[in-house]
Image (cartoon, rainbow, N blue to C red; front, side):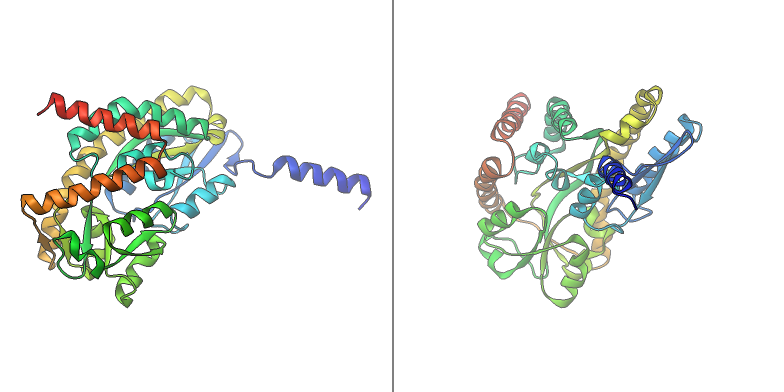
Length: 338
């Protein structure tokens, strides 16, 4: 190879590295999405519905390929593959979105947002801000979705904060600040990927985990930690997203209809997920789950620790101004709805 040809090839390689690898065939494009949700779950079905609707709207020119059930790895791996163009988006929780922008994770501050009504009020006022922040980082938000309310599942009964030292709890490997929060609660956190949780419960490496009720049922984690503390930790949210680079390669004539379809499906799914998150408890009880309730005094102890942890969250995890605004909106909603 001549020196001139070698330089030409290297220049061409430099110009193409990092470009999204959306599969183009003539006028068509295949968008590659991933989700941790297994096939058959409501979350997966919603993503599939969006893909089918996009194909219908575009007359088959835009198709969506979905990698479900964590087949491409956890959310950290999903984000990494998005950055190099191997994936173009999908369903990512606020925990995963922190790798792009930490703003939306203000919602997950322990025991800050405590009801669906508070959550809806905050998102009605902050959703646009979160979307703008993510767009600046290269992500287009197509819809926001609920994953349910996070609770603590443990191998043995736990009702009082003084018992947390008895448990080795799963800590998400892409969220180092969560380790500090678990330590603040008195737990012994063990960092791992979500795909390692089930075998780690089986081996005894961990004996506790935080999860939504529907998530614990869908992933079958609850079968190895059959006690649930009936104190909601925080709402788990996420978004259906697509890389801005790939979005801009989709003909602009489809953008408005694509966004409307995604939002409509997301809105319909939200209500269904909320119902299923509650119903999941009854299903798990049939298979041996024990729900451990607490009295008002003990709940207040959990909430006091949670409020301290939330302040740490607001100073270490999310932008202080975003946390302050979410906190203000929660207080405003409570004042309007005593």
